[in-house]
Length: 551
Image 1 (cartoon, rainbow, N blue to C red):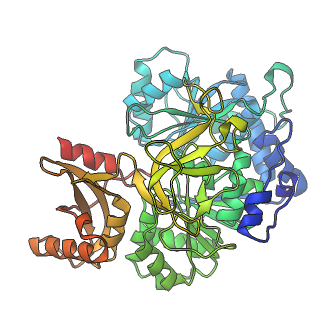
Image 2: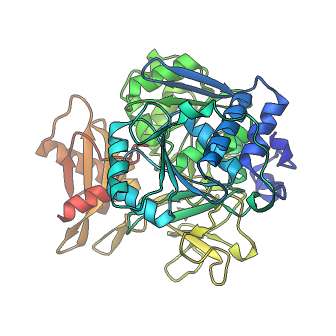
Image 3: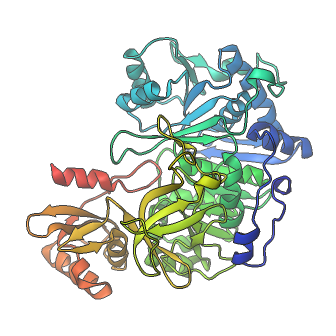
């Protein structure tokens, strides 16, 4: 399947990859018809999805199953008035029905908004009004349902509400209606036909600097995820790939649907109630996953268990994204498994932007790697000048006046689109530096970088130093206001078993950081807590820590 879109699939070197990688974009591309249905046509028995949960339930779907079910769902949604351009919010956690609903909505030309089950009524109401949501498709979850219903009390009527499992008064039952509809759904034509640059997908950003922004992706976006899946995650046709992510996050699009299915891999998903390291290790062992991707935080917690008790010999490739990879975590995981953990970097607005393509160059632990061939990446200083090697700058995607790279977002809803007058570059707001070998090294978000007594301190380096100490399971480094220095470094730390908070341990950790990195970077404030605040996907909420310190 992938050969339909890639003139070349094998490259002799990273330089060859960057110079000659291209994607063939059909005049009209639709992921549902041109990937899912084509795989079903090629092999009626080809597996698409293996799903399990914590309640001894499992589901296995072939591409033919997905084709038939998505066609029925498309006909059902159409009967409800959902059509090209309709906006549908999916709050489905990791239910297997997500894949059916998403493919059906793609076939219709509708716009999907993936959303996390952590949203409050206020969050939901904001999204409904901002995006003009026409329908909800939700998982049967008391909290989720209560928040949706509370949000809709304050909004105009007419918004459809569907449940994919279970029954609720006032909600339509997805499975109750599905079999009433035809398994034939022809590609729309005329005014209902979708174009490549029509809006397909909206993600809401985390809103760390104000209300969440609406990130717009078009129907070509899935083709940008080929690099993510094939060359970074190294998915293999007919082998199980697992990315740990809730369906409400962009990481799900990176690792659990688009690039993986284009490449013919089988997606494996574990719909867990709560992350438990031992359960995740058991699942990896039981289902014989071949390629695996998870946030660094999850690797850290697995490292607190006896990993050697689990047979992970089926796993051929480990990768991570969503937060920087500390060298100490990389080293421990390699010592245990014999395999490198390969880091990738990007945003909700992009596909994988920088990555360690370990087929072509050696990994430097802690580095984000080198740029994807899809993007022209530069580091710019505060004056907009290109940085020299070794100098910190903002990561910028440039050259957009020549056309948007495949996979890059169109722009933020309600704002000027990228590639139009004056918007010939996109600054990510992330700071990094590049070494003389072309590797990029993460420093932190613009708003995460700590400015103390004239020094600029990146939190990642301090966190990496702390994680080398045996007492530290995980930590978050942030800035706290200081009347003399402007800001000082604070470390919020979760301790390993056998260690208890004490003034002596604080001094020991501070001295450790002074020895591992520049002494001025040591944390002047240390707080011990039982658990760091995180998103459902495992990413640390540093903003929540900063906000609490300001109160």
